[in-house]
Image (cartoon, rainbow, N blue to C red; front, side, top):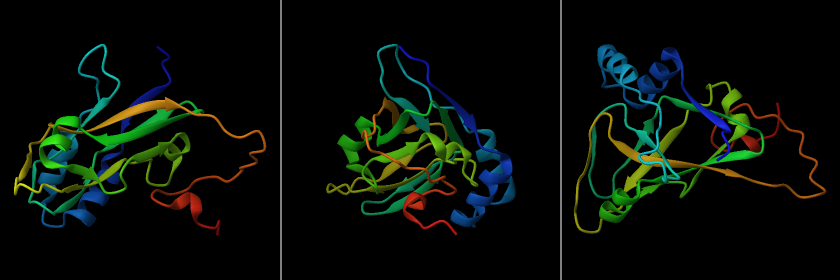
Length: 173
């Protein structure tokens, strides 16, 4: 196995800023507690390909509802690698839990973004059986797999990332 990456927590300030924006009803104490409970992703077994991402706070998701979960995590990885994010298999099977962008792509240069490379997950409970998804603090809800990738012979990309979702298609200002 190649060792090509390391997970880190984002700063308390970065986490709190996102929590204030996404969850204004949380108190400052609840935000601090959520940050304190941020757990670095880990593999469950030696043979696991995926690193489980854990929720820093409890939440419920009614069928058809969505939530944007700030994980408090950033991923530092070698340049020729990408982190692909998926719902945990059991949750996808039981609740049709979906990432709203289908598969999350975390590029190696995202680590250096203004938002510290904070990995967020917008998820939807697409249950057709009326099942309410209950995620407790510290419970795994998403998994990430590192993959090596290649580029074309005539690739001449020189842009530098400075943002999150959709930032690589925005013109540089």
